[in-house]
Length: 191
Image 1 (cartoon, rainbow, N blue to C red):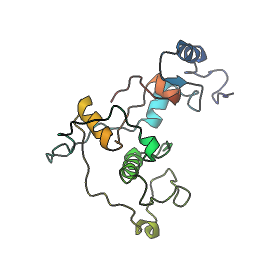
Image 2 (image 1 turned 180 degrees about the horizontal axis):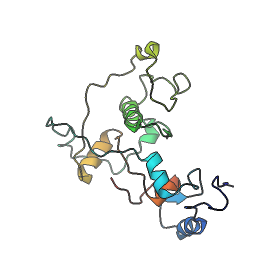
Image 3 (image 1 turned 135 degrees about the vertical axis):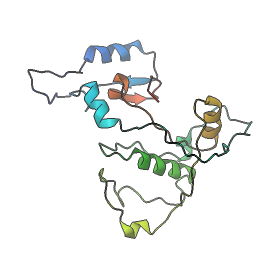
């Protein structure tokens, strides 16, 4: 059972168990909500501590979308079954979502076959610091560019996902994200 860490007189400002129960009992979404470690935060506090997304920072360099001419698409693809997705990680309050995302995307593209080091071998400490130069010298893969999926194009996103795992940024500021527990999130977000 979750215990609110706030002063008892102030209560848990955003803890609405009835709303969470009502959402889950409606059973009309493929994801569930639960009282979790963020339950004693207001939504503003949660958003401030977890939502470092600053918006799209695009390159001035014009590029052609790699999968633009792809026409044959599978009806579905699940990169988990191919071992191409890393487990979900909590970056904490470290403003490094780009690093988590880049490593996950690179791991997916190489399908982890080139031997990216394990978390136990080179753990993320959740703070900005310098790299371990001994580990840095052992390259499993090299990143020499990136590919933007055209914005607001489900067709382009489908083409990209059919060919490789795709890295995305998500605005996690809403109630559903704050109390997300499991399943495929289909709720609204700001990105």
